Length: 471
Image (tube, rainbow, N blue to C red):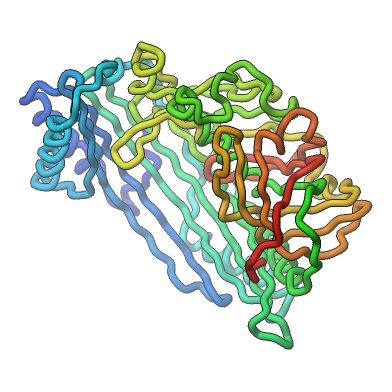
């Protein structure tokens, strides 16, 4: 029996959105065919169940489902796109007329070849275990109790959430594809106030996306509480180049920019660190990244079909540091490769426009445990995560940002103490480049767009002491 993507949703519990989705597709398709347009219709259902907690109490359990439609119309070499959450005929007609107006008023695109042709593909069961509101509450209570074991006056807050997504894409060119998945998220924030100065606080945070087994939230919470307690008392260190261990979240923070910068437009317009470097050794040989949209145990973003209804596949992006491929949607495949059907199955839609992106990045693990990497630091820093990350020199992979929620000085493998936050100014190409990666951890954590190990790096540049009191 073939897998039914609609089965990701328990319609007895959550209701049945599929009639509305199918009716909307039929209506928009009829209107497009009346006018002789090419059309791609994307029908979405997104469900979110969220349990928020603050000041050591559950404050706001919510559940919310939404039906939406995206429409792309093509007439020759003109194209227009738009989306709506108005799902009755009046709202859909408004969408159609607006997109038609955009298309008619747009200039012709000389290289445009229209919507992609269909390809054979088969839906795969990419569902994860359900996570009910009762189960989320249970895990939140565990997290609060665990943090209070570390410090009796800790302030605990965070989020436990679950999402369900279903998408069907239909086009006049013969595509009719549907895919679904679900996944979960847990975050715990801990604050510890100084006994003598209430304005002085220490902060800790841990978060993880997951699809299978629930992570050990008690361990996460104790880690965050210990970090909050540690950061009440800070060591001042100068900003300079240090040997570092970047935790999995810190690695994820940086590698997101490496993934984003592999889009086809940046690559071909020489705005990417990867431009003109296909087949080159860019990263250290220890860095292998695969895009695995069909592996629900390894990647968070999983789907059988991409944003154009083309089947996805598992691919190798970096093989021992060597760049192996660039993703393409049909528009940019026509623009840069001369054939719309050279699209690779990595299309995402952003505000009605499409591009290609590796959103299921899984980085290979190493041989040693995360904490063992920390114990191997000779004289350097352990960085838990970054924030306010921004490009400096995009072409070189240059970034700047701040350390956050745990920066420690480590000497001869021993943790000396928590350090006042530093601003980094560094290139992810240099940081993970040949010869600078000492080792990777065997344990990895899943985040929204990648799954990453910790990384022990020979050198990493910090440019100034952070002008913030938040740790």
